[in-house]
Length: 118
Image (tube, rainbow, N blue to C red; front, side, top):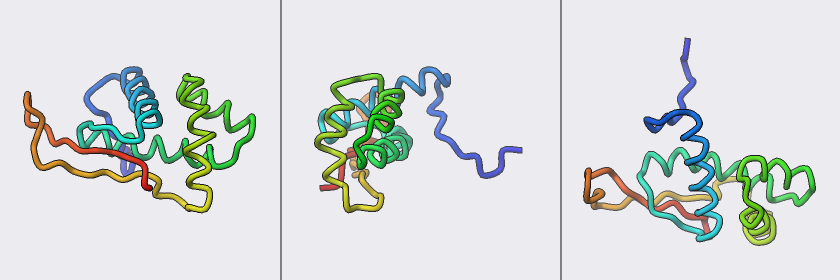
C-alpha cells in the first residue's frame, strides 16, 4: 500500500522528472531565484534544501554526493563557495516560495517564484 508515500509526479516519466529537478536546481543555484509553476516549486524545494544541507560542510565526499545529483561542476562550485556558507548557522528552511496572482498565459497554471532566503 502507498499510504504516506506522497511524491510530486508532475505528470512525467521518472527519468524526465529527475532531469527536470536537476535543471531547475542548477538554474536556482545560478540565479538565486526562478519563476516556475507552484507544483514544480514545491517539488524542487526538498531537492534543493538537501543539497544546501550537504553544502554547509565542504568535504570531498559531500562534493561528490552533490555532483552525482547535479552533474554540473560550475553549480557545485557555486553551491559550496557561496550558498552553503551563507546558511552555516541556519537549521533548515533555506528556500521560500512566493505565489503569483496571475496564472500562466497559455493554460492559467498557478505560478510562483522559488528563491533562497536572504
